[in-house]
Image (cartoon, rainbow over all chains, first blue to last red; front, side, top):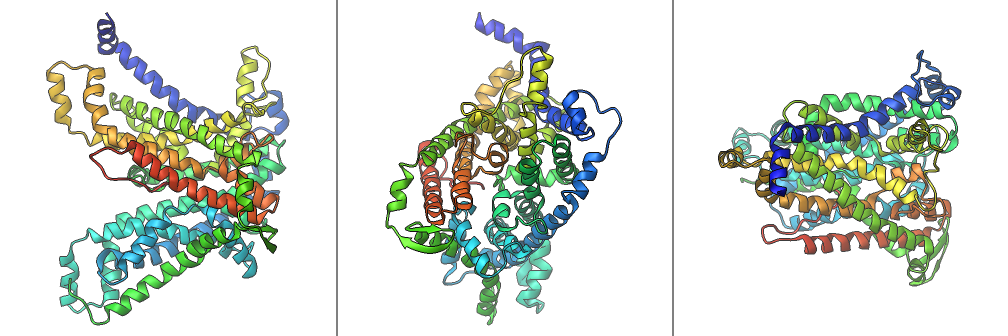
Length: 284
Length: 296
């Protein structure tokens, strides 16, 4: 009886309808809140309070104006890009160098270095932040870009070396040998052969280093909370706690953060999906 | 591989920058945290040695106990919702052709967006006066509800955090499914198997090891939760939605207890290691060796 029911249910179109219904339902859990917040971002707070569901009849840019003028969201964007961008470049550069050595050379203390990288994967930011904070105070770097760039570079290096060294070790030896015969130095081999050949892995590392750094609220709250240097995530936290009743501004801040990410995501989604599929690095 | 005479120099030169960063900003601070955990330090001045005193406090501190307990509940929810729903969606999307790409783009998007932005979005959704939830409720003719209370706050943060990661496990499982050879399904079809049977006898057994890895990542990932919880509830009201990360933050950077904060940090490291070992042991099978890199 159950089997028969199952058969009818699955073979017929009812099964297909059910499948689509569920898939659409889950898509709506993402789409509905985003449409809702986008709509509210074009209404001033009074309007939101009067009719939180109503459509924004005329596009009111006041919230965005407040976001730009009063909470200086553009400044925070620039801060985020400078800090996460610099950290990402440093990670690609130094991570690529270290990965080349660990992926393609045999030497005495290699095991020591690979063990450190493996251990590093188990060190959460929570466990290093207090001494890092002390260090930044002593170096007088608190509330400067470097305060965030330096620790972010260190923790992303671990991930970068891990991914890049395994990729580089899979490149064939023959190309490198041919270059040696042609008289290339190690440095030339690295910059002209290994780096160009590792482009897919470097792209993955770049995207995830940047995203992770850009999204990290914890360290940023502690190290770069001042208005002049705060990244976008700290600004969002500020807007949520200090402008708790200005719902229009809050909605605008959410929209201003999500829209650029959405555009980049549409552009890079193949890379991102591939990187995620390799269990790549969703940290926080 | 042929070696150069000055390869030794190259090796050293290439390793120094990366490992200098790692030593100064990861390893030294980690060791320093262990050391600091033995002291009473208020606002990084005048440390006073207290031996294991902070560790005794750890297990009598009601805020900490709540944070540990909440983290454990969080882990169960993470496995059921993140991995469970992710798997269901991956299997279902494999049955359809039209729209599959659209669904994939939508499902993965929350994984990429800053948790801070989603946290702010959800605090708006939960808002008593203008929130999406209460708007729907009053539209249906009911009275508005306070969504974040002592009893409900943990669930109010578990929901968005687990919702956000469903897309991550969806992609992992979907990738595993697409690796299954098509011929297996074709021969099953010839024998008259329906969707349900193909899923049960072909798909599920073949993606089992990926589900297992997903469960391990989901469980260990919970120890890293911070942003969304911080923005939505700050661990409150009355510590009711504290998780390890938010409690560490409030003890260290609000109450300025740097020594005790270090002790909590040490606890998080050891707890994380224990979870990696335990989940590997419990979920390990004969066909794969251990897997243990949280967050990777």
